[in-house]
Image (cartoon, rainbow, N blue to C red; front, side):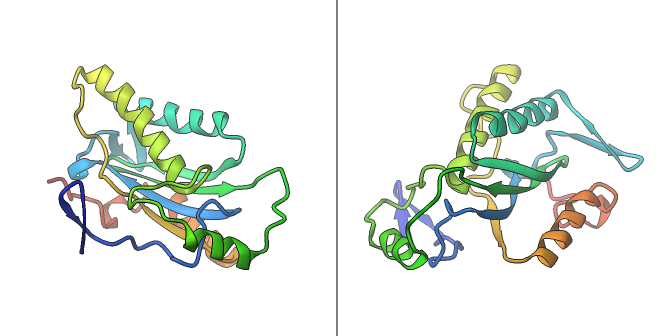
Length: 186
């Protein structure tokens, strides 16, 4: 294991062969710190957002207004996490071949916390940062962690997988009692 800021860090689960700034669709999950239920409650199969949940909703929506390359195809806010399908679609053509992109990505010498611009990582970091700032202003808790330090992402590879993930997101509220995040508060 390697250390970052003098702490051991689990190596990234990200695909080393993929540039996460590439065009494509990604399934992401972002969890609260300690899996705390901050965003509201599910009552009668409906997610009732708390004031903090409303802030998260607003910051999520704002993220796609200010980033022209990003699109949200589907998302759901749950009591302690968010699921979404985020698509990167750049308007300018990329004339670099996939092999050249792979070579250039692997030859870069960046630190463990480096995020490529206009990537899924930079999107998640920007969203989490802006939401954290607004939430901590609302709660008057400067510097308090809102999110887990990392997030889960999955490259959606085909249309069937896309449809399956979209259905999972759309039925997540109804299936909350069976969700792996249900009752996980630390």
